[in-house]
Length: 238
Image 1 (cartoon, rainbow, N blue to C red):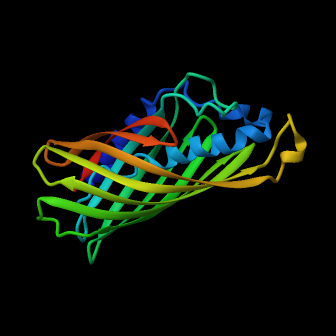
Image 2 (image 1 turned 180 degrees about the vertical axis):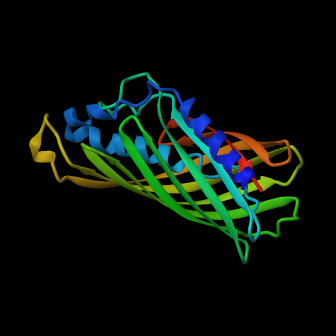
């Protein structure tokens, strides 16, 4: 129990360290029709990044809890909602549990810049945990809710990692499907109720480094819809 409480503590500290000025999602109420698809791609990239930092399953009874953040360096050029040439991002806590048959389940939740995030998914290990090269498939569903919009996000990814001590690299690719719904718009009231979906491939690479037996830090890079994102995590894995 002490280990679990410690994990939640470091997760909370990570979220507090997120770049506080990123993300002006409140400007969504001034959006025009042409802004919606680029904004949906930007949001979907954030939701799909940082879900995984290893392809090794926890194993039955294993537990992982961490604070995670993801930042995109600048919005897509057609996105007139988010500030130009400025980073924006999300932060959340993610908890995972190992189940039989090389399956891990996870949930995630956070609230950032007046945007509430919740979601979860499953991971399936394609290889035995003792193998040098690990492979995993990941499925995740998320909801991001704001007073002016909400979005649902579904993603599938294939991730590989190298089973090495201390620092373990990973890489992979996935597909994001994001559906955006307009709830409120002052610029064009006819957009209220408008719903659209976007699909984008996502490519990722990074590392996870362990310390003090159970602690870990992670860092990663994602490329999607022509934009670069970085993610970081701090947590406990037992």
